[in-house]
Length: 501
Image 1: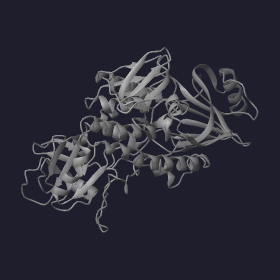
Image 2: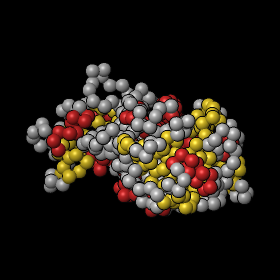
Image 3: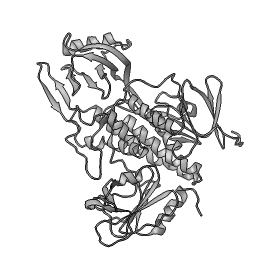
Image 4: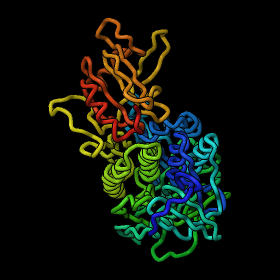
């Protein structure tokens, strides 16, 4: 390992152009960081694979400015129709009837194929001036003291100050770092997956036929497409490749001959259960994110969502350090995200053993709004008797309005990936150009020069805020600190922001 630091090709090289890698690249690029994205594939992935964005993920993608586009391409409401052998059926609302609230604008999982998510993120990345470099498999990675050198399969080289491995569970970066992928592969848990065009089913329901002998066939219409995702069991000892004929044979056996006719497949795959995660998210100047750091059961739609939130976490922190913040900030990535990954692995494993629609309290956990960094290095403990969300918790939304009557939500004010400082009944002093300070007049009476008014008192209730209290919200939408003392807020920000006179 040498100590030279040559001029680099970019600040950050992201390996992998799936949802995790694309989100990380967008987070960096929108903060003025030069970023390259390399992927070994010849072209964008065209399959559904993951097909749901959880409410917490929609919130962070709202901050990135793409949630609106994704919502037009997805669907929040789709009942699951369970078909019985006698031709009867029952419909189940998997969300339990959840509806948006003032502090949580997204109450349900958005059904949307993974390729649509990637397409939308690539469009956003293109707007930010960066394109994916396809046909760029990584062959080697050399870590130096001040930079990372990546060698591609064709012999080309790239240097970067940092790198992010977001190249999936079987990706190259983790292997080159010699990071263990702890866990197990269950050969007994396998299934076939694919996206197909078909005749014989309506597109208003997620159709499931359960085999009395075990297993099931599921056909889920993918919104804003003409395809269905199909999931089907693999017969014991079957080692053949997935084909349209294989899927048709399974469908005919379980549903009945000619009841549903599969016409064409756009993507077919075999899946087996892997439950694994790394014990390190960082090796020097290289970070792991998404499936490169954790893989698990697809039950509950947790994988793509957890990866996107990994990317948001490391994205803002890397950008801050590249702009002059203390490099110790990067150590908080593992400290915050590794416990979340462990919890998600436990959740998805439980869900795998439960019937569809029988998740109980885990139904709410699937939404990921309860993920917290409490007790972590960036979440100072508050008074034991304090009410409302604490440092490390998700920052809630609330409807407000401006002096001219225009409506505005707290999430609107946070959009853009900056720090946001709310003062309840007090005008907070902007401690740094990177912090947006907002006074919330609320219902205490009088004029504190507030930029916004708390409509109906929702913001105060969501935060359980007291007069004169300030709440600092991180770029990723988690609460950093709550305090009546401006000096405490200034002290919190010093190591996580670039120096400012």
